[in-house]
Image 1 (cartoon, one colour):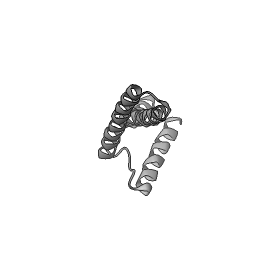
Image 2 (cartoon, rainbow, N blue to C red; image 1 turned 180 degrees about the horizontal axis):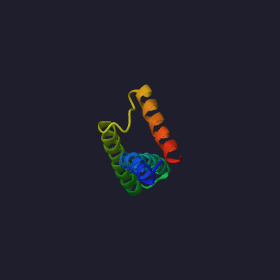
Image 3 (tube, rainbow, N blue to C red; image 1 turned 60 degrees about the vertical axis):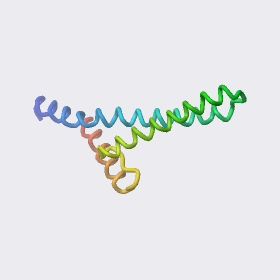
Image 4 (spheres, rainbow, N blue to C red; image 1 turned 120 degrees about the vertical axis):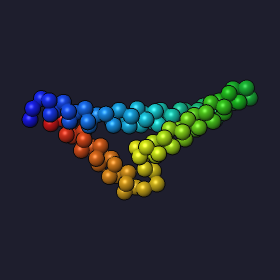
Length: 101
């Protein structure tokens, strides 16, 4: 296979993965923030700190919701159709394997 053809395949395979990788990373980070704020909220005894953490938790939940909605709208994430999500994940895995050849 020619170097040009290999570069073309790589560019075509990676381009859509960039947005997907970024969105997935953001979604996982937002999910982690929700967990962290929820735990911190249960550990605080000060009303002022409780109020601040609650506001941060609400923001983290809204952020997670927005990212998930973006991913669903752009067919990057299929939380309501397990078979579709499995097919999507399988295609990503195949693409990753093709890049290693």
